[in-house]
Length: 136
Ligand SMILES: [Zn+2]
Image 1 (cartoon, rainbow, N blue to C red):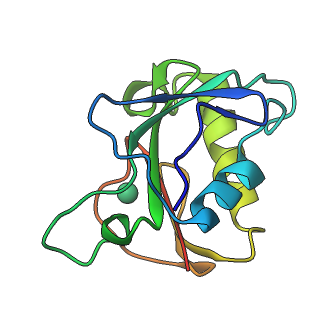
Image 2: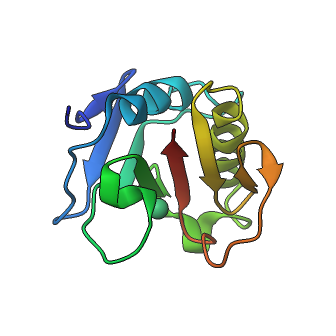
């Protein structure tokens, strides 16, 4: 399985120190689908921060099979503080989550602006501070 690269469509991808970047190809395809400098009109996306990708936890998270990725910062700004107050962060988060809905293998799309599973509203705790995207 491939590693998430350090650049996607010209946008820099930063990683938290312990992130295991090794994911299924579908996660890379999803990132290429949603990450681009012009994802939100009027704003420039220069970098995203991946806080988690593959993990190994005793639960049924899609992370454990390399089928999910978490993004927690936009252009260096944490979503926990930027979503809402920061117009650029807010617009880009909304745009990424919106665009993911047109990705054919989309599964979970949880974040500050929406919580959807296979395109339908879904109840899940958390995700105010990051976007979690998973694929089939
Ligand atoms: Zn996640």
